[in-house]
Image (cartoon, rainbow, N blue to C red; front, side):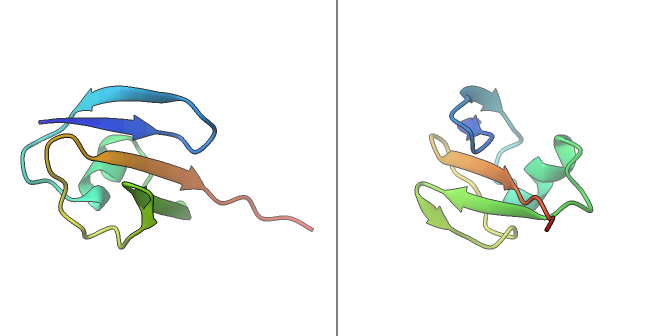
Length: 67
């Protein structure tokens, strides 16, 4: 299925992902396992176990630590 994937800084592109996959599975496909990421689906912060559907807009926003 096709979703719109963004990186949290304005860059968005269409991506094809497996049907009925979760946000967490998309993160794994993108190599984002073990990183702190805020997941935003269609404008709302959601849990990574949320299932995606055709046409969803997903933002994977990396969290930066520092002081």
